[in-house]
Amino acid sequence: MTRRTVLRLVAPEASPSPAPASDPGDTRPDAVPVSREVPPSAREGHRALNALDDAGLVALASRGDMRAAEALYRRHAPFALNLAARVAGTSTDIEDVVHDAFLRALQKLDRLRKPAAFRMWLGSIVIHGVRSRLRRERLRRLLGLSEARGAQPIEIDRIASPSASPAVRAELAQLYALLGTLAADDRIAWTLRNIEGHELEEAAALCDCSLATVKRRIARAQRYIDAHFVDAGPTAASESAPRGDEEVGR
Image (cartoon, rainbow, N blue to C red):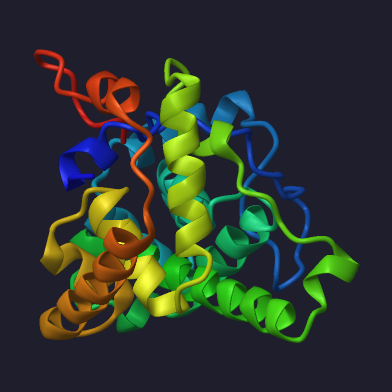
């Protein structure tokens, strides 16, 4: 299976179910600043904020502007949710991971050297949260605890394109089953490169490691997949072949 084939099995980045919104009057320190409704008097201000680029919003949010923080959340929540779900293979607990990632990002905005790179920086925080989750799950499996608590199934509908055939879905299920046996770092690096389609430099930034390290992780995972993946046959291969101007679903 080639990298190009795998990429064409990925579902488009659709807008996920709306993340739970915080009460506008919620002053808890762990509340993501997302209001349920925008008062008419504030709509003009929101339009002005939405017209700003990430660097402008980060500058305001770092000075305590909660409306700017909310604008960042609304702009990047779909990306963060989809990234976490595809790397983990499931949407279980993903909203919690993303919620925590946003809180950490907002608390550390002063450490962001390139405000325009907020999206990638947020992605690296999300990946850190997913890595911790995967490591905990793997440890539970090693200790025989996952079965008792209920192992998290792979959600193919969250990953595959709606038009994917049963053969293609079977390939994805097999891929994620193999990925589930890998170390979290190797799994994440391979998924970012081959499922999400990130360039090596982007994958390294998201993994918060060097380019050489991410290459080693991807190569290690690829060797394992090559050795254990069972080709589903010509049906799946022909379906995932290039089709004109069809783009990778991201």
